[in-house]
Length: 433
Ligand code: SDX
Image (tube, rainbow, N blue to C red; front, side):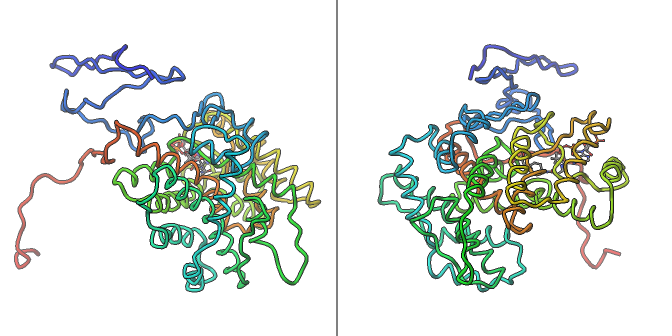
């Protein structure tokens, strides 16, 4: 990152001009450094949704929205999905380098050691109504981990981080599976040292004492790839929430719980559930793809094509390309034709030809196809966003750690453009009509 070699000039009407420094990042992208703006000029910027605002420096994830490029720590997402599993990618995001065999084995052993849930925490599930949305349980249980597993101050900080990180990555998976078992009114299936990270999840979800259950290797492969696709994505809404909570120096579990809550929204991680609900509704009401596109274009209608559009990608989301291929592989392997997939592919074609979508560069994003894969694996629709959270967790943790190590960071506290009333005097209650 290069600083203070270039400048932009800010000329205020009738006032002196200011030289504002420009930062050039490691990919050559340029940023106006406004850290001294208010001190030097008395001015503040206005940027709802931070559309034009960089909140930090980061070396974790790189996105080129125009070219559809996504890299974690410099590795293309296509290569990571092809050559790695989720545990390796989680290690990469948190530690900055891909693990060798010994490092991966040690990480896997830590994840295994941390996979059980405290017996008393298990009783919490029984207190939730079975129809509770799984994201409400996941958010509550993740912050509750801080009550059962407080910071261990008496051990080496590096080891402390390894324990806390693997504990979260492992237990979030266990909590999600136990939530599903509670929804079904079935006993929990505990994790086992015999299985890998993704095998354990599937076994905890679907194993049963009344029928033989065989973990499907293709579902294990698909789950590894899906979790990798979700693992990080720069300063998205939920990662920004995690960083903001980290900035008040709250603990990691509290920050992750905030990330889970932010992810829940249908405009963010909740979109994978909303896509399936949109497709199902269209099939049930015999809506054509063309009619869905026309509704999404109608400004009088709040209807959006869920799974389409992206703040950063102005071309096909590279993750959606991979998910689309994986979706076709899993569904053909399962041997059933999902009418939702046919409608999804028709919708993609109709939208691609439509000038409204072309002009606004609206393409399928990660959420458009992933729900169809989770559905084909037997995961219920209202748990899709939990799957997104399991995948995104290593990214949230990496950003939380990066915030803690950033010398330039301060507590997050944006300003505002005030458009409220001028000064008024208070009338006593007796005088108010
Ligand atoms: C994720 O940030 C990340 O990286 C997120 C994520 C990650 O990995 O963390 O990639 C995961 O959240 C993916 C996005 C999932 N959400 C959806 O699929 C919900 C549907 N999409 C939209 O809500 C929207 O596209 C957003 C929220 C994704 C992006 O919104 P922006 O960047 O704020 O864009 P916008 O709302 O200003 O839209 C620009 C125009 C508007 O029309 P005009 O005012 O110009 O006429 O495009 C239109 C919007 O109405 N538009 C859509 C649309 N998305 C945008 N019109 C119809 N259908 C859509 N889906």
